[in-house]
Structures are given as C-alpha cells and as structure tokens.
Image (tube, rainbow, N blue to C red; front, side, top):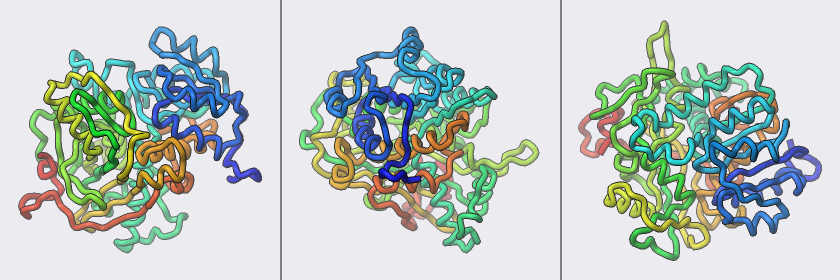
Length: 467
C-alpha cells in the first residue's frame, strides 16, 4: 500500500474539500502527509472565509461559495469532472442532491454524515419522521438501485458515524475470543452482513451504545447567550434538535411513551416525540465511568441495527437496540441546557472551541451489553495534547473525525467502482490500520456496569436506560 515516497496513494485528479470547518482544517495537513497530491488539484470551497489563510498557505485554491439548491449544479460542473473526488464536509448542503449530481458524472464522493438542505432539521412544521436520520438514510440508499455507478460514493464515514462501525466489528471479534468462539485468524472472520449479524446473535449482544465522552476544556468559559462546541456549532445545533432515535431491538418489550415507528424501508429504528438534546439515558465510558448522556440522533443507530438484523420467513428474529449516548464537554452541555431554557431558540453568539482548548480528551467507542459477557467498550481515547502532537490544527474530536475521513478516502481511491456504500460495507481492519495512528489509545475494556443501580429491572431493556 505504501509507495516508495512514503505516500499511501497518488491522486491524479482534482480533490475538492466542500466545507472547511474544524474537520477540514485538521484534515488538510494529513492529506498532503499521506497522499501524493498536486497543489493545483486540491480545491477548498467554503461558505465561510474561516480557514482561508490556512488553505492559501498550503498552496490550495480557496473558493468562497455558499451552495444552495439553485446554484450547486453549476458550481460543481465548473470544477469537477469524471474521476475527480468531492469530499463533502459541509453542513446544510444536501448530501442526496450532491450524490445525484456525482453519480451520472462519474465523480467520487465521501461525506461524514447525511445532510439535508439548510433549515430542514429545524423545521418544526415538518412531520417528526421526516426529520430523522432514518428517512435521510433511506433516501440515500435508494440511489443504490442505479446500476450504472461508474464511481464510488461512501456515506457517513467520519468518526461517528464511520469509525464507530469498525470499532463495533473489532469488538465483536474480541468478544468472540473472550467467549471461546473459534474466529482467531482473519480467514475465519465474518465477511458478509449476515455473518456479522450471526456473530452478534451468538454472543447475545442486546444493547449497543455509541458511547462518547468529551472532557476538553477551553481557556475561555462559555458565556451567557453563547453556544459552544468542539467540532461544529451549526452541525450539532441541528442534530440536537432532531427527534431522538433508537435502533429498536427484538428483545424489547415496552415502547417508550410517544414512540413513533416507520412504515417503510428496513424499519430498524423508532423515534421519540422529544429532541435528542431533551432526552437523557444512562451510559458508560472507561475513563469517566457511568454518567447521564444525551440521546442524540445518529446515522449509526439506524445503520447498525439494520446491519445486525436477522430475519427468517419475513419475521424479525434478532436485532440489538442501538443508540448514541453523548456526553459533550461541560461547556457544550451548559449550551444545551441554555438552549432548552430558551425554548430551543438558538443563542445569539456561537463559538467553535479549538485554539483555546487547554486540556481534556475525547473517549469515543462502542459499548456492547449482553447477559453472556456483561459489558465491553472498545474505541479510541485521544487526549488534546496527543492530538496536537500528531497533527496540527486539531482538537481531540476533530482529529478522530479526520482520521476516519482519511481512511475512508483511501478506501474510495482503492475501490473506484464500488458504487454506493456505507461503513458496514468496508473491511474494518483496512480502515483501523490507516486511522489507528491518529486515535491515541485504542483498545477494549470489560465492565460490570449496568443501568440498574439498585439491581432491579432488566438491564437490557431500554426503559432501564431512559431517564
């Protein structure tokens, strides 16, 4: 894989970074470190001038452009042609629209989440179901029906979603070894979706949390009427106000109050009548231990539960419950509490926490719970100090995302005619081998934690997690 010059691959075509926030700025040095790129072929396009000096200093052309439904096609056609790569890191730009443009033109595509046009996720006039990640994912996957994909489009491949899916597969293999299942050699590892689902079923995995705790601290505390965040203020504001979503397990016996179900598609998840930022669940990460997390909507809750579902004769036999349990940094948590107190009207000021961060870390992984083995967390624990040592212009959070994008981009380059894929379609060891050097301490931890502190109740039922 490594070339003689130390690069992982050579890019002969244009690479456009659409969006240049914290992740794009943290990713750019890694692209030149690991790919043989012509400066003239790396374009940075952003609705904001933030980061323009960095792009220009690197020798890249910076294009100031705010894409919307009425101008994106002409803009992309001006810069991209067959064989080029569109790396979509923007918020409020429709992933579906970009995919539909790229597919017939043979332009490769990668994003970190499935985004709608600006305002969609915050539009309270829309039915709740239309604002879920489930509906966004189903619309994107419908494009798989095109049989003329002459390129590759990789959906939702940052940290979470993205690396979290590969952490899940690695955790399942670890647990297979712990439980004495004969899957030690790569040749014996599951290869298909059905085989991975069968392994999760045999291990009796009932609950999966994408469990994250961000403990980074900024030198300037959050101020009144200000929303702060360590990766994207606009992106997290929109996610926070989406309905809470849960991949709904086959073992669950009681739906949460007001839960809504989808009537079409894979039907792997449900949604609540509450915003994710207004919904709390109990969860656990290794360094911080037990805590109350926000149940934020996430692509993984839908995708993982769908990927691990087993059906027989049209009947659901097995599916774990999957959700995102997020404990943001303390100042972001205070921002969410203030947002709720304002009846969800955004604060007047926004601030990305990056250069002012002075300490802390980001624990990002998957927590698997089962009566067979108890609990097992596998993932990345990356400190701010190590992130800055490994790559300039990064926080711990942005580097975890950038590592997922870097590995995903190499996969796209290595599989130029794969069509439309998501993280579940990729070999987890390929991705983790590339991303691993940027993830700090990567490993697994067994735990006897359960959500039932008093020992009462079924610790695998969702109502024991919900606060």
